Length: 324
Image 1 (cartoon, rainbow, N blue to C red):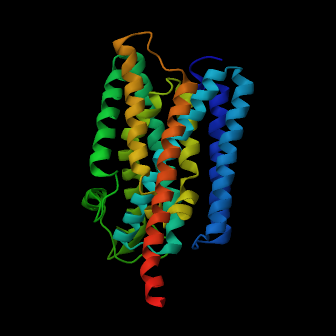
Image 2 (cartoon, rainbow, N blue to C red):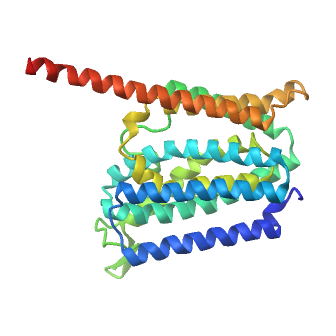
Image 3 (cartoon, one colour):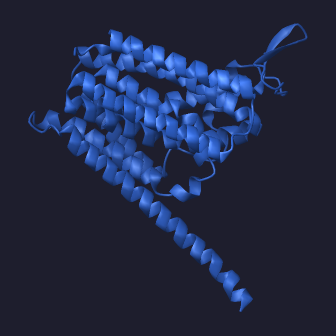
Protein backbone atom coordinates (compact mmCIF):
# COMPACT_ATOMS: atom_id res chain seq x y z
CA UNK A 1 0.00 0.00 0.00
CA UNK A 2 1.06 3.57 -0.55
CA UNK A 3 2.79 5.73 1.98
CA UNK A 4 0.05 8.37 2.21
CA UNK A 5 -2.67 6.11 3.61
CA UNK A 6 -4.07 8.81 5.90
CA UNK A 7 -6.09 10.21 2.98
CA UNK A 8 -6.72 6.84 1.29
CA UNK A 9 -9.98 4.85 1.59
CA UNK A 10 -8.29 3.00 4.47
CA UNK A 11 -7.64 6.27 6.33
CA UNK A 12 -11.15 7.56 5.64
CA UNK A 13 -12.57 4.24 6.83
CA UNK A 14 -10.61 4.55 10.08
CA UNK A 15 -11.94 8.09 10.62
CA UNK A 16 -15.49 6.80 10.08
CA UNK A 17 -14.79 4.09 12.70
CA UNK A 18 -13.52 6.71 15.17
CA UNK A 19 -16.58 8.91 14.62
CA UNK A 20 -18.86 5.89 15.09
CA UNK A 21 -17.05 4.84 18.29
CA UNK A 22 -17.32 8.37 19.69
CA UNK A 23 -21.01 8.54 18.75
CA UNK A 24 -21.63 5.29 20.67
CA UNK A 25 -19.64 6.64 23.62
CA UNK A 26 -21.59 9.89 23.72
CA UNK A 27 -24.86 8.00 23.19
CA UNK A 28 -24.15 5.73 26.18
CA UNK A 29 -23.25 8.74 28.32
CA UNK A 30 -26.49 10.47 27.36
CA UNK A 31 -28.55 7.36 28.13
CA UNK A 32 -26.88 6.64 31.48
CA UNK A 33 -26.36 10.30 32.41
CA UNK A 34 -23.27 11.71 34.07
CA UNK A 35 -22.21 9.43 36.89
CA UNK A 36 -19.24 8.35 38.98
CA UNK A 37 -17.62 5.57 36.94
CA UNK A 38 -17.10 2.40 39.03
CA UNK A 39 -13.82 0.51 38.71
CA UNK A 40 -15.52 -2.54 37.15
CA UNK A 41 -17.03 -0.42 34.33
CA UNK A 42 -13.73 1.39 33.76
CA UNK A 43 -11.82 -1.91 33.63
CA UNK A 44 -14.28 -3.43 31.14
CA UNK A 45 -14.10 -0.46 28.73
CA UNK A 46 -10.31 -0.22 29.09
CA UNK A 47 -10.10 -3.86 28.03
CA UNK A 48 -12.46 -3.20 25.09
CA UNK A 49 -10.23 -0.41 23.74
CA UNK A 50 -7.07 -2.49 24.18
CA UNK A 51 -8.66 -5.44 22.34
CA UNK A 52 -9.83 -3.09 19.55
CA UNK A 53 -6.29 -1.67 19.22
CA UNK A 54 -4.75 -5.15 19.05
CA UNK A 55 -7.44 -6.35 16.64
CA UNK A 56 -6.78 -3.36 14.38
CA UNK A 57 -3.06 -4.21 14.30
CA UNK A 58 -3.82 -7.82 13.30
CA UNK A 59 -6.24 -6.58 10.62
CA UNK A 60 -3.59 -4.21 9.27
CA UNK A 61 -1.10 -7.08 9.02
CA UNK A 62 -3.58 -8.82 6.73
CA UNK A 63 -4.04 -5.59 4.70
CA UNK A 64 -0.36 -4.58 4.57
CA UNK A 65 1.24 -8.03 4.38
CA UNK A 66 4.22 -6.24 5.93
CA UNK A 67 5.46 -7.35 9.36
CA UNK A 68 7.67 -4.24 9.69
CA UNK A 69 4.74 -1.82 9.44
CA UNK A 70 2.64 -3.93 11.82
CA UNK A 71 5.48 -3.97 14.37
CA UNK A 72 5.85 -0.20 14.00
CA UNK A 73 2.13 0.18 14.76
CA UNK A 74 2.35 -1.95 17.93
CA UNK A 75 5.53 -0.19 19.15
CA UNK A 76 3.86 3.18 18.50
CA UNK A 77 0.69 2.14 20.34
CA UNK A 78 2.66 0.79 23.30
CA UNK A 79 4.74 3.98 23.60
CA UNK A 80 1.72 6.29 23.26
CA UNK A 81 -0.34 4.24 25.73
CA UNK A 82 2.51 4.32 28.24
CA UNK A 83 3.03 8.06 27.87
CA UNK A 84 -0.71 8.64 28.30
CA UNK A 85 -0.52 7.20 31.83
CA UNK A 86 1.43 10.31 32.83
CA UNK A 87 -1.53 12.41 31.58
CA UNK A 88 -3.82 10.58 33.99
CA UNK A 89 -1.93 11.73 37.07
CA UNK A 90 -2.02 15.32 35.80
CA UNK A 91 -5.80 15.05 35.24
CA UNK A 92 -6.19 14.25 38.95
CA UNK A 93 -4.40 17.53 39.78
CA UNK A 94 -6.61 19.47 37.31
CA UNK A 95 -9.82 18.06 38.79
CA UNK A 96 -8.63 18.80 42.32
CA UNK A 97 -7.56 22.37 41.42
CA UNK A 98 -10.86 23.14 39.66
CA UNK A 99 -12.96 21.21 42.23
CA UNK A 100 -14.65 19.26 39.43
CA UNK A 101 -17.46 17.06 40.86
CA UNK A 102 -16.71 13.35 40.41
CA UNK A 103 -19.88 12.71 38.43
CA UNK A 104 -18.90 15.42 35.89
CA UNK A 105 -15.32 14.19 35.40
CA UNK A 106 -16.48 11.61 32.84
CA UNK A 107 -18.11 14.35 30.72
CA UNK A 108 -15.05 16.60 30.99
CA UNK A 109 -12.70 13.80 29.91
CA UNK A 110 -14.92 12.77 27.00
CA UNK A 111 -14.99 16.28 25.47
CA UNK A 112 -11.38 16.98 26.46
CA UNK A 113 -10.13 13.80 24.76
CA UNK A 114 -12.17 14.59 21.64
CA UNK A 115 -10.46 18.01 21.54
CA UNK A 116 -7.09 16.31 22.10
CA UNK A 117 -7.74 13.91 19.20
CA UNK A 118 -8.40 16.80 16.80
CA UNK A 119 -5.35 18.78 18.00
CA UNK A 120 -3.09 15.73 17.74
CA UNK A 121 -4.34 15.06 14.22
CA UNK A 122 -3.33 18.59 13.23
CA UNK A 123 0.08 18.19 14.90
CA UNK A 124 0.68 14.89 13.09
CA UNK A 125 -0.09 16.47 9.70
CA UNK A 126 2.27 19.38 10.47
CA UNK A 127 5.00 17.01 11.72
CA UNK A 128 4.70 14.74 8.65
CA UNK A 129 4.89 17.76 6.31
CA UNK A 130 7.97 19.11 8.09
CA UNK A 131 9.78 15.75 7.98
CA UNK A 132 8.92 15.27 4.30
CA UNK A 133 10.31 18.73 3.45
CA UNK A 134 13.19 18.89 5.93
CA UNK A 135 14.57 15.39 6.52
CA UNK A 136 17.09 16.66 9.08
CA UNK A 137 14.28 17.70 11.44
CA UNK A 138 13.96 14.07 12.58
CA UNK A 139 17.39 14.47 14.21
CA UNK A 140 16.15 17.63 15.94
CA UNK A 141 13.19 15.62 17.26
CA UNK A 142 15.63 12.97 18.49
CA UNK A 143 17.73 15.51 20.37
CA UNK A 144 14.58 17.05 21.85
CA UNK A 145 13.37 13.65 23.13
CA UNK A 146 16.79 12.89 24.60
CA UNK A 147 16.77 16.18 26.53
CA UNK A 148 13.13 15.68 27.57
CA UNK A 149 13.96 12.25 28.96
CA UNK A 150 16.86 13.66 30.97
CA UNK A 151 14.64 16.46 32.33
CA UNK A 152 11.97 13.91 33.31
CA UNK A 153 14.59 11.93 35.23
CA UNK A 154 15.72 15.06 37.06
CA UNK A 155 12.19 16.30 37.85
CA UNK A 156 10.59 12.93 38.52
CA UNK A 157 8.07 13.18 35.68
CA UNK A 158 5.60 15.67 34.20
CA UNK A 159 3.20 15.89 37.09
CA UNK A 160 3.66 18.55 39.75
CA UNK A 161 1.54 19.59 42.69
CA UNK A 162 -0.35 22.86 42.83
CA UNK A 163 -2.41 24.59 40.16
CA UNK A 164 -1.09 23.73 36.68
CA UNK A 165 0.00 26.72 34.57
CA UNK A 166 -2.50 25.55 31.91
CA UNK A 167 -5.32 26.60 34.25
CA UNK A 168 -3.83 30.07 34.71
CA UNK A 169 -3.45 30.39 30.93
CA UNK A 170 -7.05 29.30 30.26
CA UNK A 171 -8.44 31.68 32.90
CA UNK A 172 -6.95 34.63 30.99
CA UNK A 173 -9.19 33.96 27.99
CA UNK A 174 -12.23 32.25 29.52
CA UNK A 175 -14.52 34.23 31.85
CA UNK A 176 -15.85 31.62 34.24
CA UNK A 177 -18.87 31.55 36.52
CA UNK A 178 -18.37 29.65 39.78
CA UNK A 179 -21.52 27.52 39.37
CA UNK A 180 -21.11 24.19 37.54
CA UNK A 181 -24.77 24.16 36.39
CA UNK A 182 -24.55 20.43 35.86
CA UNK A 183 -23.69 19.72 32.19
CA UNK A 184 -24.06 23.20 30.71
CA UNK A 185 -20.95 24.78 29.18
CA UNK A 186 -22.16 28.36 29.55
CA UNK A 187 -24.99 30.44 31.00
CA UNK A 188 -26.40 33.90 30.33
CA UNK A 189 -25.77 36.19 33.28
CA UNK A 190 -26.79 39.86 33.23
CA UNK A 191 -27.24 39.61 29.46
CA UNK A 192 -23.70 38.26 29.03
CA UNK A 193 -22.51 34.76 28.15
CA UNK A 194 -20.38 33.32 30.94
CA UNK A 195 -18.65 29.94 30.76
CA UNK A 196 -19.06 27.35 33.50
CA UNK A 197 -16.17 25.58 35.27
CA UNK A 198 -16.83 22.36 33.30
CA UNK A 199 -16.01 24.22 30.07
CA UNK A 200 -12.80 25.52 31.66
CA UNK A 201 -11.93 21.96 32.72
CA UNK A 202 -12.38 20.68 29.14
CA UNK A 203 -10.22 23.51 27.74
CA UNK A 204 -7.46 22.80 30.28
CA UNK A 205 -7.49 19.05 29.46
CA UNK A 206 -7.04 19.97 25.78
CA UNK A 207 -4.16 22.33 26.59
CA UNK A 208 -2.48 19.76 28.85
CA UNK A 209 -2.70 17.05 26.19
CA UNK A 210 -1.24 19.46 23.62
CA UNK A 211 1.72 20.01 25.96
CA UNK A 212 2.20 16.25 26.36
CA UNK A 213 1.87 15.76 22.60
CA UNK A 214 5.02 17.87 22.18
CA UNK A 215 6.82 14.81 23.62
CA UNK A 216 4.68 11.98 22.26
CA UNK A 217 4.32 13.09 18.62
CA UNK A 218 8.11 13.32 18.02
CA UNK A 219 8.45 10.01 19.91
CA UNK A 220 6.20 8.14 17.52
CA UNK A 221 7.82 9.75 14.48
CA UNK A 222 10.98 8.20 15.87
CA UNK A 223 9.29 4.80 15.46
CA UNK A 224 7.65 5.29 12.07
CA UNK A 225 7.37 8.04 9.45
CA UNK A 226 4.04 6.72 8.16
CA UNK A 227 1.37 9.34 9.11
CA UNK A 228 -1.36 6.67 9.05
CA UNK A 229 0.43 4.53 11.65
CA UNK A 230 1.25 7.64 13.70
CA UNK A 231 -2.39 8.75 13.78
CA UNK A 232 -4.01 5.34 14.35
CA UNK A 233 -1.68 4.37 17.21
CA UNK A 234 -2.23 7.82 18.79
CA UNK A 235 -6.01 7.58 18.36
CA UNK A 236 -6.30 4.17 20.01
CA UNK A 237 -4.00 5.27 22.85
CA UNK A 238 -6.03 8.35 23.80
CA UNK A 239 -9.53 6.99 23.04
CA UNK A 240 -9.14 4.55 25.93
CA UNK A 241 -7.66 7.23 28.18
CA UNK A 242 -10.96 8.26 29.82
CA UNK A 243 -11.69 4.79 31.20
CA UNK A 244 -8.03 4.23 32.05
CA UNK A 245 -8.21 7.39 34.18
CA UNK A 246 -10.99 5.97 36.36
CA UNK A 247 -9.03 2.73 36.65
CA UNK A 248 -5.66 4.25 37.63
CA UNK A 249 -6.45 7.70 39.08
CA UNK A 250 -5.96 6.52 42.66
CA UNK A 251 -2.96 4.33 41.85
CA UNK A 252 -0.32 7.04 41.41
CA UNK A 253 1.75 5.84 44.39
CA UNK A 254 1.76 2.28 43.07
CA UNK A 255 3.62 3.34 39.92
CA UNK A 256 6.42 5.25 41.62
CA UNK A 257 9.06 4.33 39.01
CA UNK A 258 6.85 4.58 35.91
CA UNK A 259 7.99 8.14 35.17
CA UNK A 260 11.59 6.92 35.31
CA UNK A 261 10.72 4.17 32.84
CA UNK A 262 8.98 6.65 30.52
CA UNK A 263 12.03 8.93 30.69
CA UNK A 264 14.27 6.06 29.55
CA UNK A 265 11.79 5.19 26.77
CA UNK A 266 11.95 8.77 25.47
CA UNK A 267 15.75 8.78 25.68
CA UNK A 268 15.95 5.45 23.85
CA UNK A 269 13.72 6.71 21.01
CA UNK A 270 15.77 9.91 20.87
CA UNK A 271 18.99 7.91 20.52
CA UNK A 272 17.31 5.68 17.90
CA UNK A 273 16.43 8.79 15.84
CA UNK A 274 19.93 10.27 16.09
CA UNK A 275 21.91 7.08 15.27
CA UNK A 276 21.28 7.21 11.47
CA UNK A 277 22.66 10.76 11.44
CA UNK A 278 25.96 9.37 12.78
CA UNK A 279 26.00 6.35 10.48
CA UNK A 280 23.33 5.66 7.85
CA UNK A 281 23.55 1.90 8.52
CA UNK A 282 22.74 2.30 12.21
CA UNK A 283 19.00 1.84 11.85
CA UNK A 284 17.31 -0.08 14.67
CA UNK A 285 14.75 -2.69 13.47
CA UNK A 286 11.19 -2.09 14.83
CA UNK A 287 11.14 -5.52 16.53
CA UNK A 288 14.33 -4.70 18.48
CA UNK A 289 12.81 -1.37 19.50
CA UNK A 290 9.63 -3.15 20.65
CA UNK A 291 11.64 -5.53 22.86
CA UNK A 292 13.65 -2.64 24.39
CA UNK A 293 10.54 -0.53 25.11
CA UNK A 294 8.71 -3.52 26.62
CA UNK A 295 11.74 -4.37 28.77
CA UNK A 296 12.06 -0.81 30.12
CA UNK A 297 8.35 -0.57 30.97
CA UNK A 298 8.26 -4.05 32.53
CA UNK A 299 11.24 -3.30 34.77
CA UNK A 300 9.75 0.06 35.89
CA UNK A 301 6.32 -1.48 36.64
CA UNK A 302 7.74 -4.50 38.51
CA UNK A 303 10.09 -2.23 40.51
CA UNK A 304 7.12 0.02 41.36
CA UNK A 305 4.98 -2.88 42.57
CA UNK A 306 7.85 -4.29 44.65
CA UNK A 307 8.38 -0.85 46.23
CA UNK A 308 4.64 -0.57 47.02
CA UNK A 309 4.72 -4.00 48.64
CA UNK A 310 7.83 -3.08 50.65
CA UNK A 311 6.28 0.20 51.86
CA UNK A 312 3.07 -1.59 52.87
CA UNK A 313 5.09 -4.20 54.79
CA UNK A 314 6.99 -1.47 56.68
CA UNK A 315 3.75 0.34 57.49
CA UNK A 316 2.27 -2.83 58.98
CA UNK A 317 5.21 -3.45 61.34
CA UNK A 318 4.31 -0.78 63.96
CA UNK A 319 0.75 -2.17 64.07
CA UNK A 320 2.09 -5.66 64.76
CA UNK A 321 4.45 -4.29 67.41
CA UNK A 322 1.55 -2.56 69.22
CA UNK A 323 -0.48 -5.79 69.28
CA UNK A 324 2.39 -7.56 71.03
